[in-house]
Structures are given as C-alpha cells and as structure tokens.
Image (cartoon, rainbow, N blue to C red; front, top):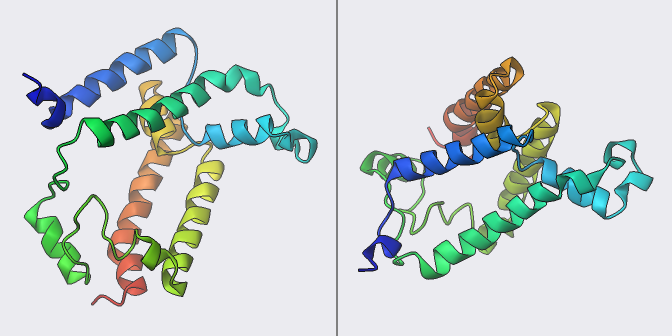
Length: 188
C-alpha cells in the first residue's frame, strides 16, 4: 500500500511539478531562483547599511525564502521518511568513469573523496571546495542568477540572456569535467 513512498517516483513527475510552479510564478508575476535568497538574507540581516546592493525591499522576496525553507524541509522529509536507504543508482558508465578518475564507487550521490569532512579538511579538498564555491557565487552574480533561475524561470519566460547563461553553464561544466577536473586530480 505504501510502496509509492519508498520507491523512486517517475522522472516525469518532477517535470509536472516544475511546470505547475512556473505557471503559478508567471501568474503572480514572480521569477524563480535560489541565488537571490542570499541577497535577501543579507538584506534582512542589515547588509544594506554597508552596501547599496543589499539595500532593497527584501520583504517582497519573503515568498522565495519560504520556498528555500520548504526545499530544505522537503529534502529532510524525503531523506528521513520517504527513502528506502539504498544508495543512489548510477549508471555503470559513470562508475567506470569515476574509477578512472581514482574514485571508489560512491555510496551516495557524490564521491566520498570530494564530499566528506575528511576530504574537506585536507588542503586540496578545502581549496577545491572554497575556490569552487567562490566561482559558483561569482558566476551566479555575474550572470544575474543561478542555474535554476536561468534554466527554469528564464528559459520558460523566453529570455535570451537566460539562454546565453545556460549555454555558459553547460560549457563551464564540460570544461570542468573534461579539462580542469583531470588536471586537479592528476588523471590522464
């Protein structure tokens, strides 16, 4: 009876939910994106006294903060009560590629060699995470939004800058995966 709770839902279900959310956002004249939440949180904390960038009516963005909190709570609920505890199923080709890069078969969605406290507390791990975080933050600010904002909201609004940003995101991901990642981890 409750098998729908712990079994993976079909991939298309999330697409339907995203379409529904986008129709609601368009109807209410809002746009979607998670990176704007950092600006809103900083404005709420009073950063507008320090920088003009944070001096705006943050109360108009409380719906986006509610969405962020809901995503965090939803992730917790999904992991705690709606998962069956099995590791994420990834393709054999991905496992072979990770092995070629020197990573063990991941027990979750990410390789433990990158996303554990032991890895983060090494000099190399800290630099990878810190520089990666800075580049993502700078890129989201420079592009005027994050991948979710441009790829979901911007493209659904037929915005050319969002199309350009999404192409840039994909090009950057390919560059990182096939050029920089092998250099950083000494893969030939």
